[in-house]
Length: 284
Ligand SMILES: Nc1ncnc2c1ncn2[C@@H]1O[C@H](COP(=O)(O)OP(=O)(O)OP(=O)(O)O)[C@@H](O)[C@H]1O
Ligand SMILES: [Mg+2]
Image 1 (tube, rainbow, N blue to C red):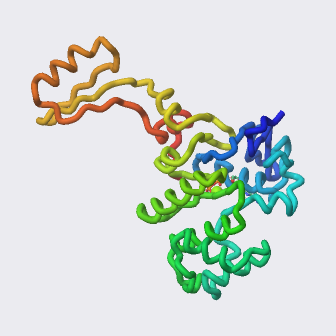
Image 2: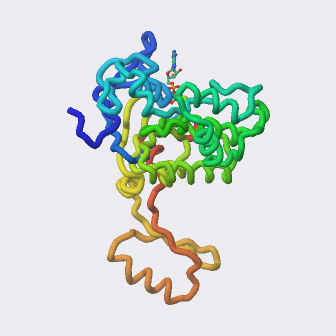
Image 3: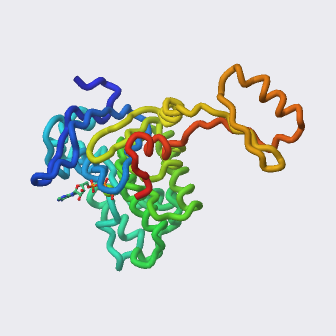
């Protein structure tokens, strides 16, 4: 059933809360070492799926991580799993370092490793009181905690939600570095640019259904139905041509005029792919 390279695998996974069906027959696989992005609007079921995969919620069907059923996750598997679902478990009155130390003790990790994890996420020696740090710092503290025990899989629920672009970039760099170190990352996001930049594969989740799956770039090309080229003249005139060999002469004429300001092909971004598929905006 599961192929050896798949570190996460689900087959016809469903979840209901009472009469309400939240996940419908989800079948997906995440390859070892990749960054996988689960995209979808608010209420799509993203957090629910992460909770199932991390053994925190019941479900119907099949779900496994590291070849172990998500119904059977125990201490030996959790040693390899890092997760950041929200900021819970952070003690506001303790320093960042003491927060980390508490967690380190659970995993039997020494102080030096704790210091290294704080340095790694850019929190220095962690002297600040956790209740007084900014949202971006808190996000990095939770990330430091999630990677402290050197997990093989990292689950991140909206790791950059509400952060400014500079802090977001720092977290992106950290995630790409973790990937380089061989960690598999499963993240959820509303942010299309983030998905495009980070993810090897994405799944678009809408009202509990996976409506599309693939490599971000390929999905954009697949939905490039307009397939047009837009040429902007310096005087503001816009010319639209079909992106096909027959347009070559017309484009050459436009260039020959020496008035071309810019030329763009109409490849859609992931946001427009999502809207095409669902009729809904992704942002909220
Ligand atoms: N414990 C629960 N009991 C009842 N319904 C729930 C529970 N947890 C989630 N739901 C419902 O399941 C649906 C999916 O919620 P979920 O939190 O997984 O969405 P999400 O995609 O993570 O949304 P967001 O982007 O806002 O975080 C929602 O309609 C939500 O109200
Ligand atoms: Mg959520």
